[in-house]
Length: 270
Image (cartoon, rainbow, N blue to C red; front, side, top):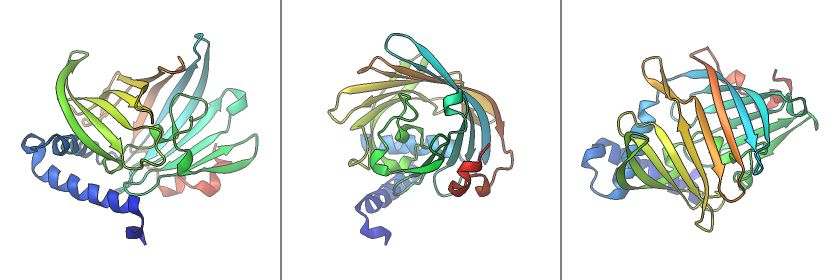
C-alpha cells in the first residue's frame, strides 16, 4: 500500500505543496520554499504536452589528462501524462559498447525503474535505487542525473536572482526527497527568468562538498514551445574528469508508444 512507504508519503505531501503554490503563482509565493516550488512547477508546466521525441547524441568522456573517448547514442523519450517520462538510449559505437541499451521509467512518487542491457553478458540488469548515485556507463552523469527530473522528487528553496551568461536567472537550492539513496545533499540551480530553462547546476556530495557542475548550452525551440539544449557539460571537480553530451536531429511527435519502451525486449533493441 503506497501510504505505508515513508518516501511515498513525503512525495505525496510535496505534490500537495506544489499544487497549492502553483495556484497562487510564483510572484505571490511568500517564503523562499514556496517560491522555489513555484519556479520548479512553472518550468515543468511549460514542458508539458511534447508527446515524444527522438534525438542522436554524442557522449564525449574526458579523463583528467585530457584523453577523450566518444560514444554515439540514439535516444527516445515518451511523455507519460500524470507521471514521469520513459526513455530509451541505445549505444551504436564504439564496438565494445555497441548494442548496450538503457531503459528508464521515471516516476513522480516513489523509486524510478531502470534497466541496462549489456550485450557482452547477454543479460538485462535492473538498476536498484540504492545504486542510482553510480556512474552511468563510465560517465560523470549518475543514473539519477539522467532520469527525468520531476518536481516531486525534490524540495526547494529560492535563494536570489542574478545574471548568468547575460540572462537574469532564478538561483535556488533543491534537496532530494530520497535522502537515503541519492548521492547528493543538494543542488544549486540557475534557471533563466525569460523561459524557465535550466542553465547551470552545482551538485554537492553527501559531505556537502562541491562535487560536479553541469552547464547547459545552445537551446533551440521546437514546435514553437519546447526548448531543448544542443549540449550539456558535466565537470567533476573532485576527479578532474568531464563528460559532454551533444544532441542533434531532434524529431518530435514521431508516434512512439509504450510498446517502444519494454524491459523484456531490451535484448532485441536495434
